[in-house]
Length: 632
Image 1 (spheres, rainbow, N blue to C red):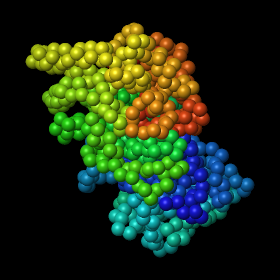
Image 2: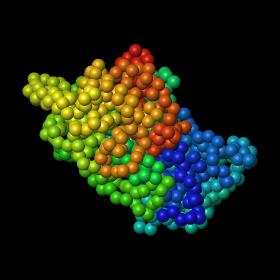
Image 3: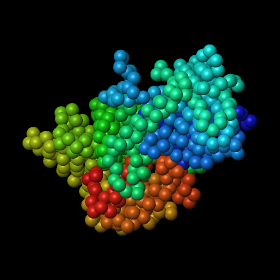
């Protein structure tokens, strides 16, 4: 789709993935490039089609505000404790600060019910407004605003018209598209085809605002109202963070930013946590491992619940838990590996061939065909999540027990079959070791839950425990090589980072020699510059010939596994190194190129931040004489 000489960023290089800022109002998300461009915004929810999509094609829509003629900012940061970004610019004439936020406000539905909210309403709600504030803090700065929406993933250019009496309100529509965008500003707005633009000279102490809104909630109408609503949003995020329980430790800021990121990836209407905010950011430069991660994976549930519970966010944990149990009840026993954030089960995959892709990485995919795969970790994930939830309450009601029975029996019915594994390989199904381990988790935790039901379920508990023992014996007989190291799947000699979960999940005690040998083998043989690969691509039939970067979640798993086997100094050293790879805003993509430090894959990645929380809390616990085995 790229057109040479186009307006805006058409000929600009793509910003490194790690340089993007992340905004959220817990219904939609936005990515901010360092040059002041909003390059990714999907409306009205985070898995809707994009209106600004230039992160995937330089002509797929953008929204920039900043000093005219200056692209590189002096600094970027989050206002502490918030999801509100500040970008500071130096120009020859003065200094400018741009503040960006997806606004939050009080609960809106006082006289009518929301059509999409499935969780208990709170005191706050998304305002459906992207607010951009500019302030000259020194000298004089010429400011330019350019807003060019392109609806439906870059297919429909906007048509602009004025809606107010002057030049301060405008409406963007797309032919045949039912989403209206309202632009409100105290700058004078003009149109150049599908581009809305404004220019103004700001002097020291002067401020302006631009607001883009997409619902009946309405945008600020003047600077004073914009400032008030921005303060409300800042205080909202700071008050939310204050609810958390964070250790007084030098790594606390990483835990707090990870917590804020997970909250930002949570779809408030249902409680689902999206795996990432983006689609098709490549796992290798120019590669074809490009996937849509704007959905929620059942396998993420246990770590998500543990992270939220550990940091004191029981409400968020419970909302996600109830989303999981909702889809489990609706599945009639056939639980999928992933769902839409609204709970939908159909996620058909297609390619957007009109988009050039991030830095020419094609194809660009929407939807995710993996939702049809058989992945046997799903049963262990949901049973382990129920087990965590019940441990917090010491009560297992009939509704949850019915789900437990259904899902454990599904695991026992299918555990002997091959599957696609937790990495969702698109090659031939295998008897993946981690899948068998998760089936063991389903039976083992299911037996523990059955015992909570008392004498009436004693026979079932005994049968499930016997099945768990059988699964473990099968794994030990078929997934351990002559060195005493767990392999990727039965009949394989290759390593796979997913087996790092064996000590974390309590499949075997940390003192077991096979556990220790496996962890150390992965640390020595499945790493690049200490960072962990999922597997060696040349040794695994995953359906692709291309390479990929190291998986950051696996590196954090290695930290946790090293802690469990007593290699505490090595764990601390690796954890410190991994934290040094964070972006300047303390965000992580899915992968890291170990040789360059470049972030790869979708961004920001929930699973990475979940593993960070687990690893950091494990290391801090060891420093304080506490051994944590959260999933055992």
